[in-house]
Image (cartoon, rainbow, N blue to C red; front, side, top):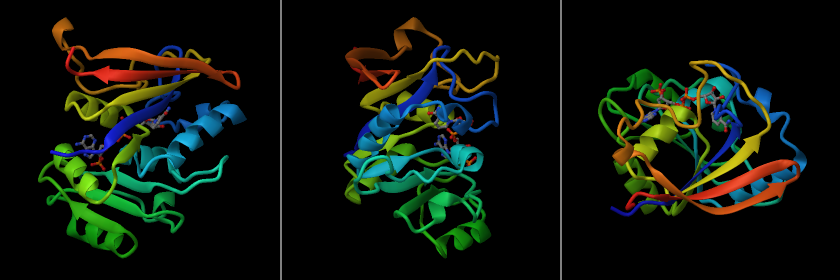
Length: 221
Ligand SMILES: NC(=O)c1ccc[n+]([C@@H]2O[C@H](COP(=O)([O-])OP(=O)(O)OC[C@H]3O[C@@H](n4cnc5c(N)ncnc54)[C@H](OP(=O)(O)O)[C@@H]3O)[C@@H](O)[C@H]2O)c1
């Protein structure tokens, strides 16, 4: 299988959280990201062919996923959703950039048809989006560099399947706490030391007042 070179980029608090609490938008925390760190995020977006977030992030944060802060081309927005439950008012359905909704054959026909009136919708998988099949589809569509911006469920599912090459963290100088506050990677987790993913630090630097770390994912180690 050919797949895009895939980079997860995330704003993460010192205690590993993505947001203030389950169901809360990460925009609340991101408003404290300074101009330089935002430039880093948007420079990265501008270098990519595609940008992906999970459907829960669309419902919670309602992002645009476009390039701002710097000039550059908007990547194609890709949203996996098994249910096709994307509000028709979502900003990713606006015309600023192309959008592909990746859903399943079990999604509501009515929802799929409504979305098809405004963006491209493909069905890859039956009960859940087949992420490996989706990556193959994206590569064949010319999306060879893909950025993923969360949330924690999608991050877990991609990492677990060995589909991520790099991780870039914009560190947020906060402690949020909370047992069920989403962390950078959610899911069931690796239970054995032999299974945990190993990372190699590639770079660390400041952008504005934010520490940025860039990591290579080492599936073979
Ligand atoms: N700090 C940051 O950088 C950052 C970035 C992004 C998000 N966030 C935060 O993260 C939270 C959302 O994270 P989340 O973990 O709840 O949700 P998520 O990862 O954004 O989305 C999960 C959803 O993705 C869809 N999906 C479809 N196929 C999938 C598959 N094979 N594997 C995984 N997901 C699949 C499903 O949508 P359906 O339910 O529609 O089927 C699933 O419910 C929000 O609070 C948001 O603010 C923070």
